Length: 252
Image 1 (cartoon, rainbow, N blue to C red):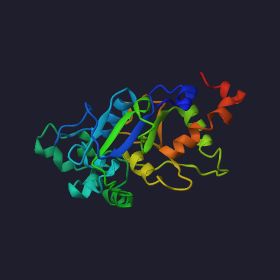
Image 2 (spheres, one colour):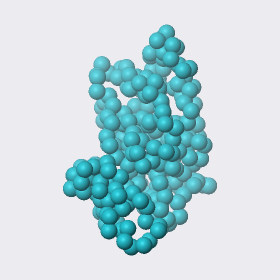
Image 3 (cartoon, rainbow, N blue to C red):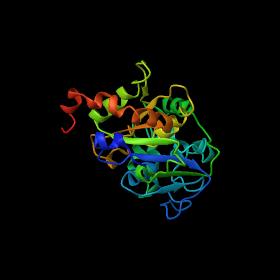
Image 4 (tube, helix red, strand yellow):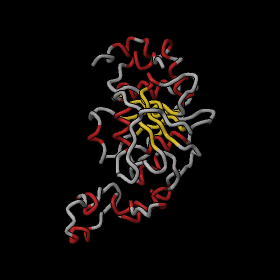
């Protein structure tokens, strides 16, 4: 699928098409059943040209299952994420198990206490897509005749500014983007909530400090429903991207 937007904005990583489907693509990368893995790493792999796939047995980690709209996999797997995201579990240090990560012992300190982190956990918009698979692929490999559900764009500050502005180009609205906190893959969960809305919002993401090392420091993500992406794509030739003010910063 050709993208005039990607050509004009010169992204360093290719936009990723995300599809909820009952069909598994041939030759796609997939985590082994029961093995831990990071959805964010697979998202980056897709932006670098790979096709990746997940199902309810291969979503990598409990938070990843939430991000991929397989429901409340944190509760299903009795995962005490509220400790990991806050003060940790110091008692684990006494176990002598060298495989326990330091972050589990000391906590990631995203929240002040497990109680506050639990409030965040309860606030998540847990969703079950009803589809067997979630597929990530480079946008160039997506099929217009079988379009994806979401598009995830890796953008620097200038590119993200343009995307947020262009999201309101045909609307006359000021609030066209949201920046929720979550795991690095949770922008998928939040963007899924926008599918089918009359005026969907773009979701800024990849704020998860534990996963920021996976992408260049200047990048964040902007994830939108496919129809919203088309709205932006079809505005390229009339938008701010045609102006002198954009040309001044386009190559910096």
